[in-house]
Length: 329
Image 1 (cartoon, one colour):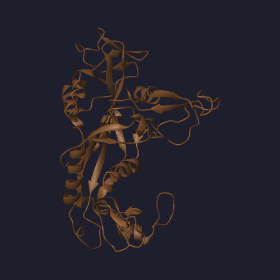
Image 2: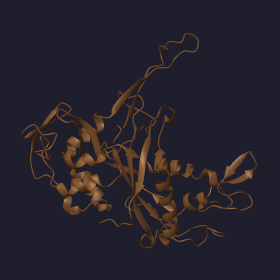
Image 3: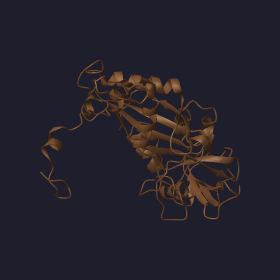
Image 4: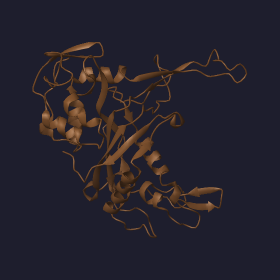
């Protein structure tokens, strides 16, 4: 059998599909309390250190690898000692398995197995932006909402039709309206369509944050193209300099700029859990529901997690919460 590029599939690929029907699924919500920088690692433009984005839309993302690594770090206290005071591992030489190994996978090549949790990348569903009236708004677009509906975050019935590039859907009697138009950054949009009250109310109840609840009045639906433009060009850009130890002043070659996703951005990620893949021991045979409950309890207990770079300067702190079990469209 060959794939769409004409390459042969291995028997292993055909024999071991992931049994999605045996999984349990929840939605993870991340609301940025401070600007967030998950770096792309390289730049071909004017920004020295850009954030990671989708290639085809330009929407910022938090890669699943970053989510998994950050969450796994919060399980470090439960790791087992390889050598006292030297190294703490998920699975030690004696075969002792920690809770972190059950959830996130083994780090021992002699006893290798995958974790029970499967995380998707975190996608933006509401992005904050300046407004000429009312100070700020949260913008989204039909593409973001259609994805969210497919993943079970919102109802597909609440997704409005896409407005034209020069139009926007917003609350005509709300805090952002200038008669029949709205001004976001330097762009003016004319009112169109019917304000999606059900959608705005659903989004306002997603995270337990007093500030975000006012999205019920401040939601703006733009075209997919204008959403891509703002998501690409309306992130924060912070300039940094390197200070010389000898002179105490900026070094001539130490200037660089860094892009950050703004505070008050709402991301979501789809979290799947499957039956334990631990071969033996206390965590063998644990159900998908067990794994999801342990993960969700930790998220609820901690409340705030840090993702990306520059944690020591306050970047990347996010409120985290999970939904009840859900299924996408």
